[in-house]
Image (cartoon, rainbow, N blue to C red; front, side, top):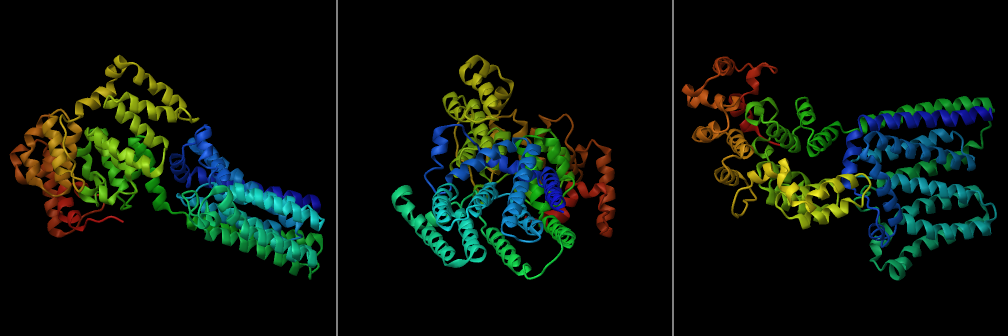
Length: 576
């Protein structure tokens, strides 16, 4: 029967690993990719030092170190699964030492809670690593039988845990106190509990005054309220589960079961808990956020076909989706031909981000300016993102590209030097560095010259609330800038200003041998003689019939037209 119990532990741990890996390699992959872009681990002493001036910095550093391997999403999913499974196995070991029955059942619950933490794209590996370290330390603590030695070990562990985990050391304090009061018992154990509680209350205060030189509040709470971990209630749930496990262990001692009954009852309870936990994880999955993150990641990595593929299959009304959809169309040269094939519920706001509504999206907004050739403003947005979020690879690469285009090789070298100190971006930095050192190579690089040809001459100020005048200015100053023209005409279309489209037909003809589909749809009404595609004229006749009858088939081609947008979508714009 003991062998059966051992097999039971490995069976459930295997199930936890496989399902966790499956979830984060498929449904939760967007979170893995997002987290990869939020941290840039650097192999420097200075990078480590910035973590050591606050409690819990070592674990933050370790979390960032492991997160860098999210560079490969599948590897990231396996890492998460290994951490969750390790936590499960260690907790099983802890509960066994505490003589808790059905330890697998109780161990699964914290695993589910930890998975729910990682489902939040704003979270990180920090809480998972902190919980795992706490449980490993508890195993050591419980193994010490003599009360006086356990007291000394507990005091030493408190100091080490506070320095390495920060406020997460409270998890160990709670568990150790419960163990002393409920498991070991006796007045000596009670004294141990008092000593641990007292020391844990004064330790942050003393460390704040004499080691970290910080305020009292962060001494007790850091890193709970940081970008590494913002939600605390899940830790409370984990503590509640452990309390329940320990208490139930004492109650269960009142009942006597044979080993065989205990084994099969444990399987039944564990199976039920596992099914409930799996259901919770599935229901807690936010498919909307996952889709938005997938579009944003594909857009930042310029996987334009993937962006359009996702956009064509979703009705989520979020600014990032039309923003990257329109960027994808612009880069593929299809913005004016296929503009209305994709949802445009945000209207002209889906073309770009303005400064006042984009305080949390600066790392995305610069892509629009870079596409239309206003590289200086793209650099401005990237630099603001750098100031707000710190050095991360996507932003640093944007800054490098912008500075190279503007010929500021010394500035580009500065950001390249940072990327060279990382693991997975080192080679990109080394390859790009050649452009900083070889002015001839720089001047002959195609993508740099193409972008320089888009840059409008002279200086002028941006209107941070709307970009119509800026787009018009760029088009007038750089007649060869097709991307800026496409965006200008798309702005007129999405803001339902067909007369301005007609007024700019000469500019459009300079770049198109045949007027784009969306422009011809405008011409059908305002300049019929200019329509060259008879399919557009026939489509308009079909549209008029549907309009009069107010019956539009959802999959009908007439829904994907400027006419339908102007009559039905433009007046009902809005974003979630």
